[in-house]
Length: 420
Ligand code: EPU
Image (cartoon, rainbow, N blue to C red; front, side):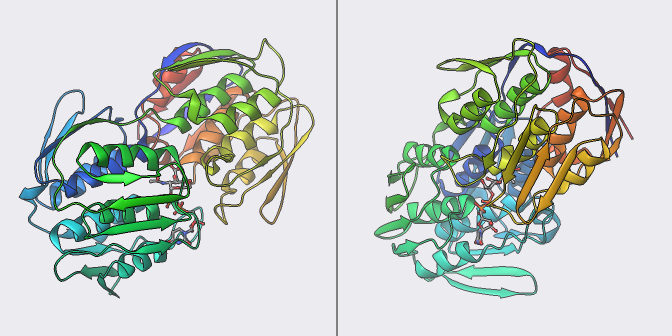
């Protein structure tokens, strides 16, 4: 297994380009299954999760052409197997996103239930409940979701009990080819949901209200192909901004969207950062100062994203003062805390709250990555720790951060990959 070794101490300075959004690309790739024609998806990030989704489509027999820039041409009508196997779904929970489109377009889908997850139990009951409300016949047997429908799915009013991002996306995709109108209440408002709606509308769907908590979809008989560019990754952007803040540096991130990062930018300013933005760039300057502690409470968009929680835990670990972080989205997303404490952080956990007393200096240590964003938190801590930090199990990082060591090196960090 590859490892990352980071020698802390450099103040990060410079400019880098942000990649396409993983969490937009995954539903958009699943949406290609709705289409009767060739569809082209661009600005895909080079990430393990994207490879897994492409592999999943390929295993189903879907014709795929990938060019050297990772632009992907998909022709869903060539599908041979309406089946997402456990071997792939267990490596990436977002595989569940093929359920809605496959069922809506081909009338049948057999998708493995995603298993346990390091950050929480993460059930998919709301996806299943919503599809049943649209007339699907669904049985869960031997670890698989077997779904079928006679004729087309029917539009329905679905009130989602909890705000769920992939749940909203799955149902929105299914509704795009259903007969009649679907209304999704208490829908997720994440920018990735809006991006998917934009893509569906370009394919000829009729989706209104994405970005609000009520999405109305008027189902169409068929969808056509289009070229679609996924949005920039807001979590990658936020992570590099924290890299600048934690190292008291100055970083400029290009080809990104500061308008979908309000809650994160607000907290960075509270931590003492000077932020400047343009349409497609954001710059953070700490003017050499130590960050101040901030209090954070994660919640669905537009509130502070759970996917930035570990990075702010690392920031608070070296900040001036004491900050609290409340995690409300996932029940077990503090696995990085014990690793940060091994680096000299002073963090105590009380239920879903981390109380973080900032220390002057962390010390490098061997640490273990447990999930994608926890790993990012450990890398950030390593950037400012005294000495070397060796981050093990970085396959988690490779699922969500394109070329992380090259990008950090470009900003002046001392970080190297040690191949296994
Ligand atoms: N939930 C249910 N039942 C369901 C679905 C969700 O109880 O049927 C609960 C979950 O257990 C959780 C809450 O609802 O407590 C929210 O989960 P959600 O469904 O919104 O999460 P997700 O769609 O599985 C996406 C992102 C995650 C991100 C969350 C929250 C993708 C592919 N994944 O997951 O991204 O943390 O939304 O914003 O979009 C990451 O990129 O590192 C990552 C984990």
